[in-house]
Image 1 (cartoon, rainbow, N blue to C red):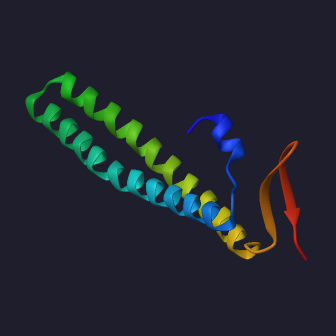
Image 2: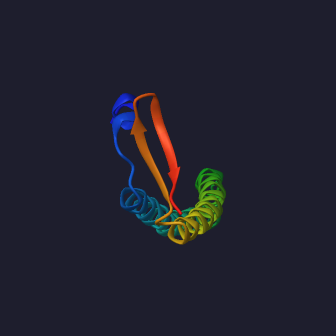
Image 3: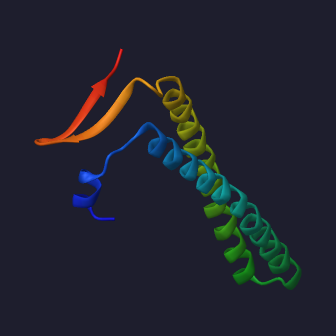
Length: 110
């Protein structure tokens, strides 16, 4: 979807909530996929030690380092997005983002 299309779309609380849920699920999926990569890296490290070869050990170290960083990053992103989701739930019915003649309008209803 292009930027112009996004500007003309009406963003309701329900659509925001659905997008929030999709993002949280994607981050959890990414977190789950990090574990097999880390295990593969550990296997390569062990294989390099058994074969007394530096290449598998180096690949294993690299893979473990990268995926541990991504695991921590995904967990932090999930926690932050979950916190934002809770705020979205709390203020669900009060805020509305709607297109206007001049662009977008943000309305707070009491």
